[in-house]
Amino acid sequence: MTKEASSLRWVIIAPEAEVIKWTAAFQKEAPEIVLEVGPEVADPASVDILLLWKHPQGSLASFNQVKLYYSLGAGVDHLMKDGDLLPGVPVCRIVDPLLSFSMSNYILFAVLYYQRKWDKFLKDRKGKIWDHDGITEENIRIGILGLGTLGTDAALKLHQLGFKVTGYSPSPKDIDGITTFAKGQLTEFLAQCNVLVCTVPSTPETKDLLSKPLFDQLTQPTYLINVARGAVQIEKDILDALDNNILSGAFLDVFETEPLPKDNPLWTHPKVQITPHIASITNPEAGVAQIVNNAIAVKGGTDLVHVVDSKKGY
Amino acid sequence: MTKEASSLRWVIIAPEAEVIKWTAAFQKEAPEIVLEVGPEVADPASVDILLLWKHPQGSLASFNQVKLYYSLGAGVDHLMKDGDLLPGVPVCRIVDPLLSFSMSNYILFAVLYYQRKWDKFLKDRKGKIWDHDGITEENIRIGILGLGTLGTDAALKLHQLGFKVTGYSPSPKDIDGITTFAKGQLTEFLAQCNVLVCTVPSTPETKDLLSKPLFDQLTQPTYLINVARGAVQIEKDILDALDNNILSGAFLDVFETEPLPKDNPLWTHPKVQITPHIASITNPEAGVAQIVNNAIAVKGGTDLVHVVDSKKGY
Image 1 (tube, helix red, strand yellow):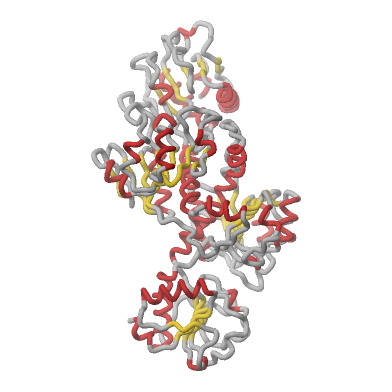
Image 2 (image 1 turned 120 degrees about the horizontal axis):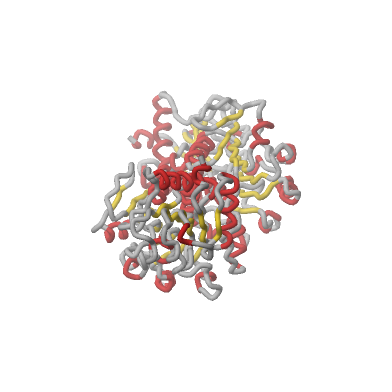
């Protein structure tokens, strides 16, 4: 089947580590397909499929006959902001079942890190302090901001584990056992939780969302977990909120600038946990089959899956 | 209803912190009942109910007309090893639904601590190292040693989260979606997992179970999580297994001697995580109703719940 797709011309434009990972995955799963590495390739006008992850802005203009743009991850913010996308050409993204596994487990770890007071036990340990009789669990009410595939999966799993969970999404959602809030109810949603998990897509609407105006509507203090994108947070406001006890702590996987610059005060803030954007990493081998199937669909004129809605931006 | 139980004579024998907690819970939930604090009380022969947690050995002999022994927790090892228990008098224990919530979440945190390589991120953070492209998840196969109420709950929850889970229990168990091993299959069970979670009851059969002969049957290396009792582990053997890479790490909530002595090398071992026996702490307010109902049943000669099987020892 992959042979059919090998008559198309494929180009990948991504950071070197991604190129290495995806080239290996294609060689294993679809060895007939040749991946050329862009952006500089001969005769860009004859390229059919572009595989993209954080491509340099301006590098797409010469690919003027492309038939399919593919984001090599769940997020498409890096792609949708490019003004050179050809109108009417579909943009697809990877929907990897392992993404939910990893993302929900990451969120769970961050929730438990706070709820089970790991900072306290780490400190006690350094002093060889055996505090059996202290209060060892926080009484938490988790609010999931963003009920897409990943947010909903996390909400359901946290609920199954016995936690109190609510969720917010602009469009109304019906999720078993979970109270959800929709457009017009953000203030109400923010006031009733004390652990806020951000899983929104990165769009013009969500830019700078995690900032002072939102923090001021929270129960004080609230624990913040952000696994979405750095563009949705204002780090200066997070630091202010931590120092004013509006936030009890922050568990962050994403940052305004990545890699996080060495002089960023988040690195050393005692109430902040940091991971290098690894909450959920797309597994290329699972992604190759999806990409190839969509390429064949483009060629044959049949329906694609995992197409991005260009109006919503995700 | 609690009035009926107030005509009985009640004595609690437990460490001071427990006495304070339970006295407060009885005052709130069953204020008619007077709890006398033992072991030294007037006329012990007229005492009906003994509430016990880590009572001094030898302190029960004078209570020679007692009608019910109650363990103020899920474990009864502290009680069953006492030779002064009156034959035929029931021993009950607290079965608190919140115990499963806390215990499973603790196990989950310990599993994720290892699977998501928290030690690595902690170390990277100190050096302000942004390692986005490293491998950030361990490929784990979890084995739950002990499929009682708590072990089964943890197994099911880990399975629902998408982990590969197996379990071992001396008597055969049938748990949806989980391969279980029974008596005669311990070796086979130990060889197929690389994260071992110990949730066995503490009995003469499980004493010193987590020791060299068992470790030698594991896939090397295996990550060890013990939330059972310190009596089931030999700490010298754990330290040897860590230093010989038979164990990749250990996440321990229980210890041979508690509080863990300050000169115990586990406190400072880089591959060991330590908590002060807090994986799951009985919530006294939920326990009071169970205790009172069983006291009324003893008085009326009706059936008790949560009675310990004296042959099995749990």
